[in-house]
Length: 259
Image (tube, rainbow, N blue to C red; front, side, top):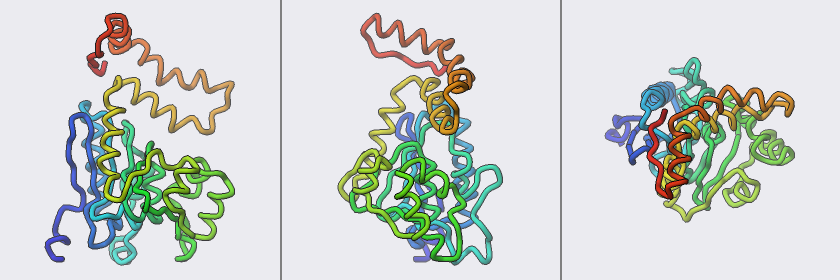
C-alpha cells in the first residue's frame, strides 16, 4: 500500500500519435485530490504543446475510472480544481485534440464529469456512471449539471442529477453517451484503437472540427456558418488540404504535415 501511495498520481504513455493519460491512485479508486488535479493539468499542458499528439485517451488504473473528488483529502487540500482548467485540471478546458475516455468500473461524481468533458467514450459493459453529489450535500459543479442534458435525454439527465442514482453502461450506450462497449478489461485497448483511427486523419482538420463540436451547442443556425469559419478557414487554406486532394487523386495514403 505504501508503494502505491508514493507512485506517480498520473502516468503518461505514447502510442504513436496517441497519448494515454492514466489517473494512478487505485488505492483511492482514482479519486482526485488537489495534487492529482495539478499533475493532470501539467500533463495536458505538455500534451497541448506537442504537435505530434493528435488524440488522447484518459483512463484510470486498477479497474476504476474515477470515484470523483477525494473527500478524505478535501479538508486539507481543498477543492481539486486548477484555475483556468477546473476540476481535475481538465473539465473546464480540455486539450486541443480529441479525448477518448476509457472507462472501467465506476465513474462517479467528478469522475463522471471528466467523462462528460471527453469527446468520445469507450466503456466496459459492467461500467457505471453517476452524479451522487446531491446525496452528499454537494452539487455537480464540474460541468455535470449542464453537460449531462446535452449527452442524454433531458428527463433522464434530470433524474440522474436530482436522485444521485447511477446508470449502467448498456443504458448509457443505448442513449448515445457511450460510443463503444467492450468486455470488462477491454476498454483501454478499444479506446486506443478508436483514438488511433482519429489520429490517422489530418491533424488540423481534426483539431478544428473538435473545437466546433465542443463550442457549437448553443449556436443559432443563422450565426453558426459564420462562427465556424474562424476554425475552418485555416483548414481549407492548409497544405494538408492540398495534400488530401492530391492523395485522393493519386489513390494513395495522404502524408499529413500538420500545416
